[in-house]
Image (cartoon, rainbow, N blue to C red):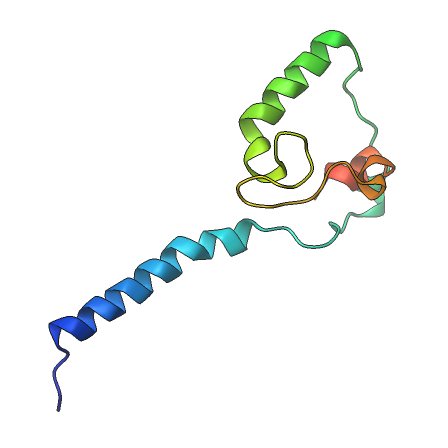
Length: 100
């Protein structure tokens, strides 16, 4: 029976590292539209649109969303995601757009 050489072990370790480092990217990638129940699709946004809430929303977006959706919301972040500027996203009711 052949024993694994140090060279073969290096290759195996490299492959394992590549898999472990790239796997999360596939887990967090989003494809297609989210499926939302009829009940959740009827949910109305409880947050009033005013300058204070817009500023808070921008702050949340910069902290939590820019990495995937990009600075402009066009889906061109480090981990490419949904383009938030499309009519499909903008014209959907609140529950359908952001409720998973």
